[in-house]
Length: 113
Image (cartoon, rainbow, N blue to C red; front, side):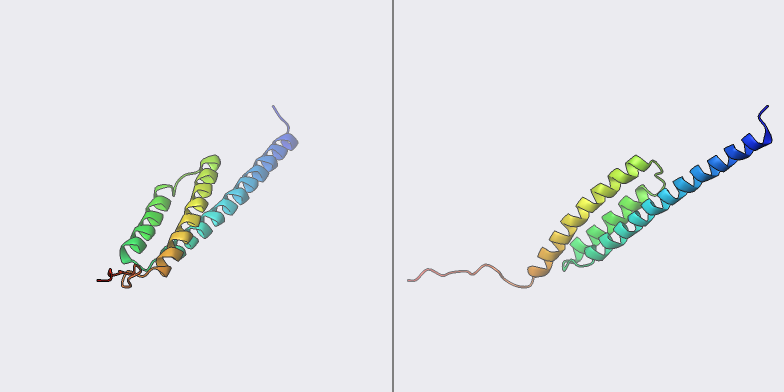
């Protein structure tokens, strides 16, 4: 049987590993929350109601679907994908703000008679 000192060291080692995993998870959790908020913020910048609602609904649904995911590698992959999606969303929201649907941007030229 192992001595009390060895058992105590094992317990301490397990606690440290648990603390490390917990801090790693909280850092990843913070990244996910930050990404979520940023996606919602930029989704709200669409001028078209349907585009705005689609972006917000897709963000919420995707995050809810992966809420219980605990595999670190999969979470990191999803965060990377989310950052790419954020870049696309930023560009699309900026373009949406430049071209309002109530304005005409093509000049209709009438041929001279």
